[in-house]
Length: 267
Image (cartoon, rainbow, N blue to C red; front, side, top):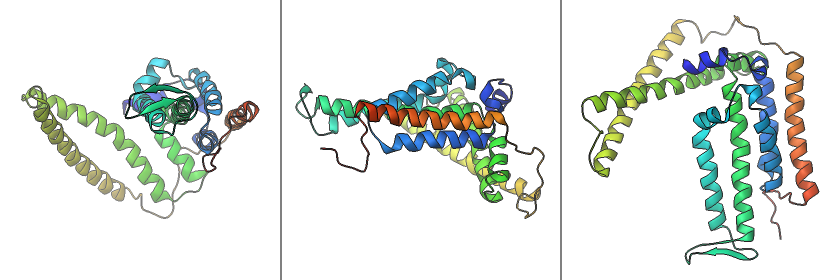
């Protein structure tokens, strides 16, 4: 609920764009980045994406707060790629079990930058898009099945609720002295118990939501819309922006000679 209110209270430019246009622009950038593992195209795309933070009402602090798991996953993926990839060029670091060469380091940096460049648009999209507006756009403009859209919307709503319930269960358990102290094994058992409690709450919430949606006629064939989803001139600029970032990333990589398709073996 807090995320929804923050989105609706955000007056950044991208919050006024149609969610389907933003989703399409993100898809274009993601597809281009998924084709190559070079660091030039990922760097160019990431630079443009960082410049879009103010347009989505985000700061670097908010970006870290909302996307730190993705950022850490990209850094860990880059490190793993650097130490596990075959050596190529001069060896920069050798620990016996694994080593890092100039070629593997370049590959690891490219993997990390590509992970960041793919994750950042998703964070931008979710930060400046109300889930209900996204569902309306998918159903009205993309003509996706109602049941699929409503199921997706329910899942997006439950994600925020589950995060709040995890904190509530944790505070309740700590108030009873469970999980607040002990050795690592005891803490692990406490975390597993808290996870089981969250699972029970998730099943209960899903059951209540399913009954409520069925009672309100969400499974009906004919539907009306309280908020029509329309396109404006801003949406055209959003689409052009996504296409421009994708084209600039490819052009920079081709110009630097680093474009490396993932499904081709580069000698």
